[in-house]
Length: 301
Image 1: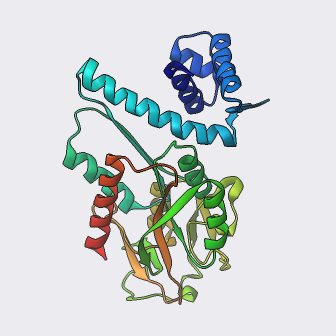
Image 2: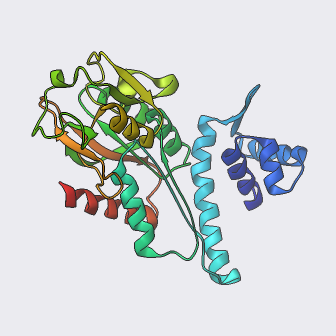
Image 3: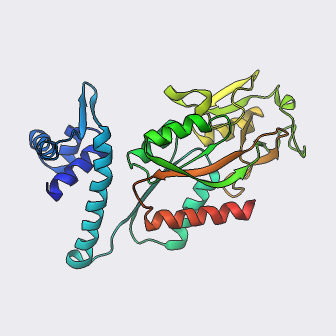
C-alpha cells in the first residue's frame, strides 16, 4: 500500500468515476483501475462496487476512506511543514437543512479568521443527502433536526452510517412569512389561521417521506402546498404569494430582512443539532465553526 494509491482512492471517491479521476490525476484510466485493484487485492477488501452506472463506495470502502483521508491529511501537514514550508490551504465542508443561521455562522467564520487560502463548501440540501455526505466524508458536519415523529427513523439511518447526533438547541415551531403578510402583526398563530395560504416546503427527492421532511407537522393536511428546492425561492414565494413555512424561529435578519418568525400554537418541539462520523474527530475548523454557530444561536434565543 502506497500513499499514491491512497490519493487515487480519494480522487475516485470524490469524482465517482474512474474516467473523471484519471483525467484529474493525469494518468490513464487502465493504470488507475489497476492501481486500485492491486490495493483491493493487497488489503483483501472491495473498496468500490462496480455497477452499470459507475462506481460507488462499498461499506468496507467507506471505512477505509476515513482512514485514508487521515493519513493523507497528516502527510500533507508534514510535507508542508518540513518540505514545502508554505501555508496550507484550509479545507472545510458542511451540509445542512435550509437554515440561515448555519450560513450566517459560516460567513462569520471566514470573516473573523481571514484565511489566506481556503477551499470551503456549504450545501443546503435534502435530509437524506446530508446523512450521505457526512457518511462518505464529503462533508465534515451535517445540520438537521430530530423530534418525536422522525427521531426513531433517522437514528436508524445514523446508526447504519456510523454517525452520532449532537444537540445544539431545542426549538419551538415558528411560522416564517413575509413581514407584509396579512397575519404579520399577530403575536402567535394557530394552524387553522394558515389554511388559506400556500404552505411552502423543501422537496426531498426519492426520500420524500414525512420522516425526511424539513418541516415539522409534516402530516398535517394543507389545502395549498408548494415544494421548492432552495431557500431563496421559498422566501420569494413567501413574499410574492403570502406563503409560509414552519421552522425554528431563528432567522438572520441581516440575510433575510423581509422574513419574520411568529410562534405557532402547537404542543411540539424539536432538537436542532449536527451529525458527525463516530470514528473521526472534528478538525480545528470544524470546532471553530461549531463555536461560531453556538454563539450566534445563543445571541438570538
